[in-house]
Length: 273
Image 1 (cartoon, helix red, strand yellow):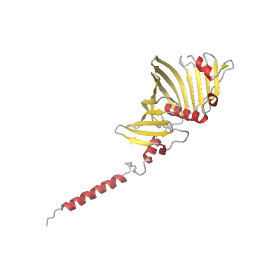
Image 2 (spheres, rainbow, N blue to C red):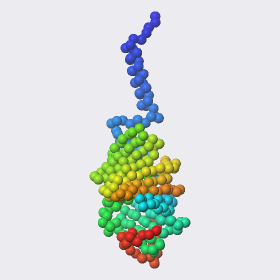
Image 3 (cartoon, one colour):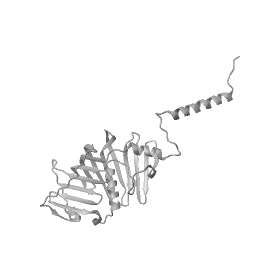
Image 4 (cartoon, one colour):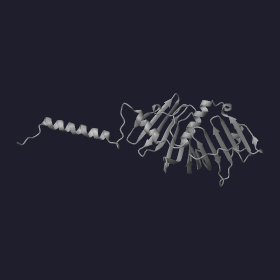
């Protein structure tokens, strides 16, 4: 006797097959799903994928472009995440003409052309300790293509909101007058940031490009910071040349005995490279 399926039986079989496919897909170890009830799981995965290095050293080319023209110079940069920034300006065949060391509580400046230097606690510059720590965290994070959260606290998935478009993922965070949007493209590269801060009276845009493969993922060879000050559009570009990561950093700042000490304000007013 030949039997055929009724419409109801066909519907039941279709439902059963659909349910089986859903269960198989959900159990597959190759498929990473995130429950809607736990939105921070995906954010945490993004943060984990972009944990890279704590220390970096590199030769760099720096270009500063304004409405009045552009200037370029070579330098060597050392970055200790969240704690210090060391810069040696070397515009002439590797010959150092100036050096900067910025820490959580102090600033050290040296001008070899004028044989002068300045050393000051940031508190003496009317900069509070919390503000200095946060500013250093932002600066080192921006230069090293890493996420950060406003305020002086450890980064956490719960500090962010996540938005997804056809082109990118956007991580957003804010605290009081501080706002930050971080953009991740389909290749998984953190390639752009839009920042607003009470420390600045203008929005800051950061663009990363020329990504290179490293042992911890990809890292941009170029960082461009752009902002508008008054009617002038300013672009600050840093090109990294053969950076090395997580090696021991020598943050030396020797001061020759014949150099004259000046105030930070006087030092900056006389700065000519």
